[in-house]
Amino acid sequence: MTEKKKMYEVDLYKPIQKHFVKEGYEVYGEVNDCDIAMVKGEAIVVVELKLTLNVQLLIQATKRQKLTDLVYIAIPKPSFSRRSKRWTDLCHLIKRLELGLIVVSFSGRGKRVEVIFDPVPFDRAKSMGQNKRKRDALVKEMDGRSSDVNLGGSSRVKIRTAYKENCVQIACYLEKYGPLSPKALRDLGTGEKTSSILTKNYYRWFERVKRGTYVISEKGKTELREHIELVEHFMKKME
Image (cartoon, rainbow, N blue to C red; front, top):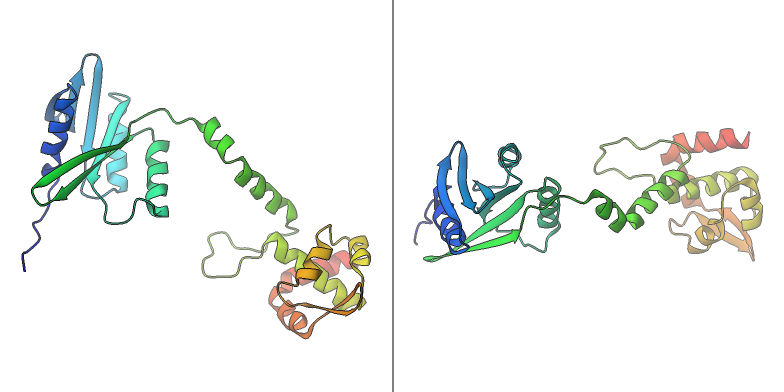
């Protein structure tokens, strides 16, 4: 079995140098702390090399932006898919820092340089415009919550969404007042989604006892105990 040759940052230099020489640049290695510096007319370009994309590389690259707007980071082609969320998130971060990205592929004796994207100013207004739907969803979720019962930074725990809160509210009212219609519940303040929540019955907390009338199920009564803070909140509202 052939032992895999250890890679060094200098292995990235030659293929990148050749690529930019073909593009008409004068390329130099290790110039005043820059891994690669090059010039073409009035344009000065700096490339920082690393075997892994890490915070130190991003810090180095952003420091080079004091010298020129045209700063790239260069890494070996990653082993994970470029269609993955991880890759998409990394690219977003690099673009957000107004850096360019170069990857170098090594296969046998061949070395291929690919400029994934060039350094350009980050258009924050455009980015926010493209994500208006997500922003509206964020605001809608906050508006739908009646209290802050989730701990920020939590993982592997159930998050109480606005929808879940609404279900808890309906369950509380049914437990206190007994059988009610969607209209009666809405009159108590459970909101416009009341009918949909009762009909879909996603958590199996409700039972229809007759047309247009619902009660809380045994499952609902049991699981309501997992939301003590919310239950107390809605009980106070009823008082």
